[in-house]
Amino acid sequence: MIAPCIWEFVEWLPDKRRYPWKEGSVGGSTIFVRLALSIRHKQFLGVVDGQLYSHTGGGSNLLCLPNDPIWANYTTGDTKSAYIYGSEYQLEVYPTNKLFSFANAESIHDHNVPCAVCLTRQPAVVMMLPARTQCYAGWTAEYSGYLMSGHYGHKGKLEYVCVDYAPEADPAGYRNEDGALLYFVQAACGSLPCPPYVNVRELTCIVCSKY
Image 1 (cartoon, rainbow, N blue to C red):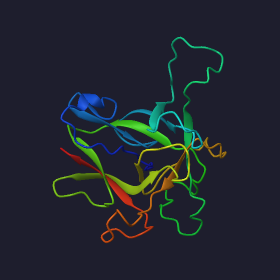
Image 2 (image 1 turned 90 degrees about the horizontal axis):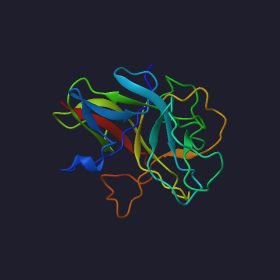
Image 3 (image 1 turned 90 degrees about the vertical axis):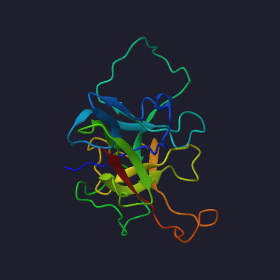
Image 4 (image 1 turned 60 degrees about the horizontal axis):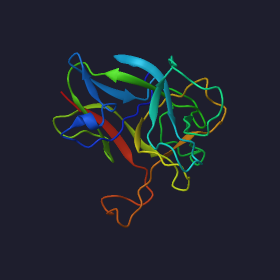
């Protein structure tokens, strides 16, 4: 099975310690986050989580929470502080024009989004290229798909992420419970140059590695 994949777009920084959770090196390999259930070289499986779409505060990034959390000291009451919710695909406006391949899931609308933390087979630089389905010369394609993010009209903010062309969904999460909601990203001409971009066309993406 090929699962959906996610990668956060990170510009090259001279000091990567500013983002120690985004990528790293272990035993001659590079760590990166993928939205996946069953892929090789995975370190742990989990679920994608973020801020509720209707909340104005809290974090804007998506996290891959493991399926086996370990607790420390905790309270038993609601402290009205920060929250984290699950995530769901939102595809209700695409009933006939299905952009995704559904080879790995017949339906993913309102389903929860799985993830995995993975290792490359050798040291590598990994990046996500928006608006591309092919890597540039000298780079190796890991997967390609569509750019997704939060809805422009929602109060909650989400980063842009790359979701695999043939996504999977968490089979246990199909109940439309909301949370962090992922939508296709369309080009908006104006300050965005058109051409080469085309107004309201869904943007592709690809994750590339350089060994």
